[in-house]
Length: 155
Image (cartoon, rainbow, N blue to C red):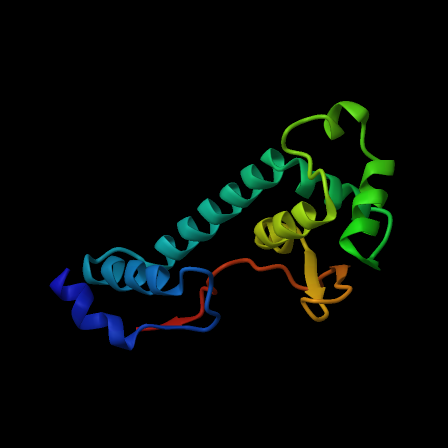
């Protein structure tokens, strides 16, 4: 730990991933232990990718949004309109599950939760507008996916 602590201030990740401090610490400790720090970053990226895939597979809402976005690159409307759109393309069996959002308000809250998973899958979720008024949801295919920390680092 002390060797990692001595190196931590010199670690510079070219792109800050989620949990950037963890990535910096892992890199510094791997380097201090004589391991290849890039191997830590590679394992970290792969673990994050597997976690995102599992989250996507386990989220009915995220899966249905991915399916919706397969046929378009951009969608915009209210949470109610999105819920109607998704209902029209989702089986009755899926809509009856306890996981399926039953109202636009619940959908909006769940969109905020699944947004990072969708971003990793290449779909940006933006909710905009005043809180006391009509809020719009925008779904768009992103040009760059969050792939975690870059291998370009300095120690």
